[in-house]
Length: 163
Image 1: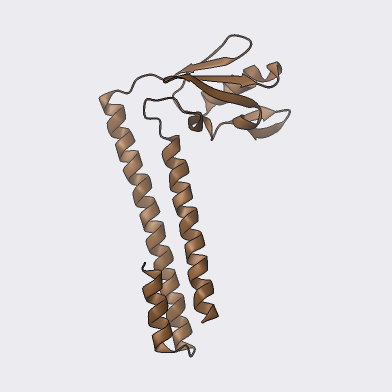
Image 2: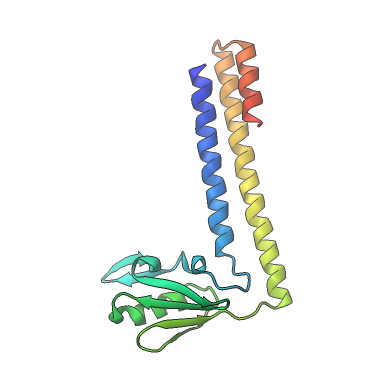
């Protein structure tokens, strides 16, 4: 019985990770409104070490379509600007020597359609991952049943994995 519980606990843990990953990926999708999460994947060269942008600067949204990045060290402005350009997010940073401003352009119809496709693809990817986790858990339960686990416990475990 404890084997089934560990299989189900492992499955639930991995499912939660899949959902968290989906949330992160959906936050990266730029939907016309500025969000600091848009820059989560940007890595900055900080004295030779690649460091997340959020660890070397504060990121704010003073207006609905504007991001303001204020580095904690002014010497990093050029590195941050370069990292944003190199990140292929389609954002054009402007540097005034103290902070970096990014205006998020309004979405065109084609861009919105692309965003919908990307969101659907990410959702489908998460669903497939969760289906695979359930299948693996059921396969492991069947292996335990072949090894001597009572059938009623195996059926209960399979039913719990489908919830």
